[in-house]
Length: 210
Image 1 (cartoon, helix red, strand yellow):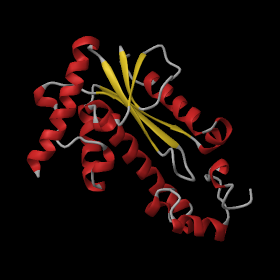
Image 2: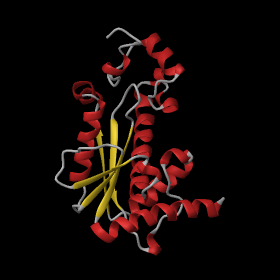
Image 3: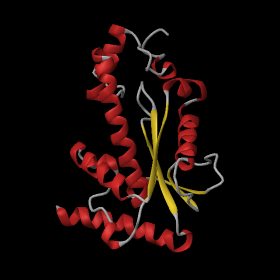
Image 4: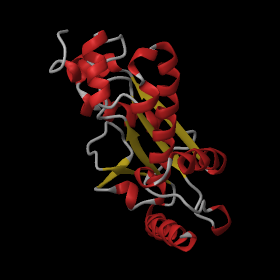
């Protein structure tokens, strides 16, 4: 099992090292929370060192990792990254400009939030971010690039922790359990209690009257 994890990480690293030959300094960028019915979309960017002694074994697409694995890697990535940036775009903005544009705005801010300007941004699937930094959109980027996979972990863990905090404010919705996604339980609770202020109006209009 360990050897499989190592092989997966090294495959992602190999992809990034090939990019580094041409672009030298580049960042990976990914989001968490495009689909939920409430809360922000969170975008993370990071520039990761590719030296052999600084590779974090176990990094992979965040969806393929357990919660415990993600949380451990989250701390390692923050300590090891050359720099990183995590940005939130709130539910009001999502309702105003739509989730795709909100995601792009978060990505723009995540690039600008890096302490070192990259020559290139590797993005998971999203195109045409409003940035002067060159971009490559990669389908299933978090399963292709080491840097995007690291960013996916940063975004996912950050957002999950945020939803756990919001659960304490709005315990009736069980946000810590479903993280705001449209599970059967969440929709039933939404219908029972009505929306709270962090629900995305544009996402819940099919379930409750706004």
